[in-house]
Length: 273
Image 1 (cartoon, rainbow, N blue to C red):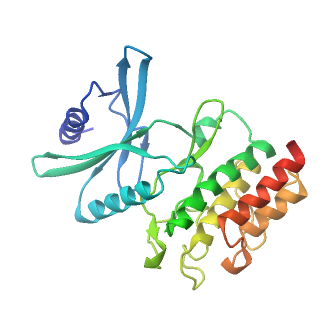
Image 2 (tube, rainbow, N blue to C red):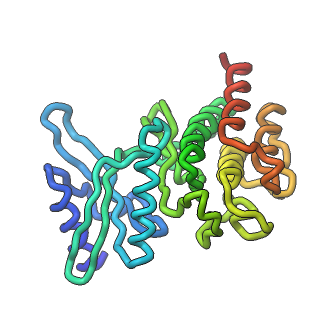
């Protein structure tokens, strides 16, 4: 980390105030437009407290993107399965301007699952929670554009709930434009410009379906994409759900997150309740 970056972090720490400080200067995660760091505070009533802060050095393009991200987070903040922000602000260090926003600190799904395999029940719970988050996006006409394991967070170490985060490349559905950013392996054919279809909520359904497939398949991608190979370790019913969610053409997928969530809930109740 160079002196300029350290100066920006010092300015952000001062701007946040209230006893919060950076636990260390290494990012928890690095993103397309900014990095996420861990904040710490010694609370006399409850002991150590931790949060996360995303810092985005602002070029004009990045400034517009982070404003869009905050707008989308604000419109979906009542959904219990979406990471919400607590506070935000800007700092100026010389000619450098940076925006920051503070969020509750949750465990990224890859870190949570680093030393464990995901059972079919785990996969169903993740799918139910994240599809609930996508329902809120659909109501607000937001396309997330980047559903993948590293953008899913666990609310506690016991996996009490799963949350969708990082709206840094999200779009308003009305824009109907193709984004240049994508995540290899999880993005839909239309996001990768392999078919002449606009991005839609069904693009997010594809990405969620592929995320669930990888988790159920011992964290491995399928060998082919036109029709997903069956995973022997999971039920016929879940294989069918994943295959439909990841259909190559949007018209063959679930047409809404609510439809996908209904199928996942039905299977969860049938098998585990």
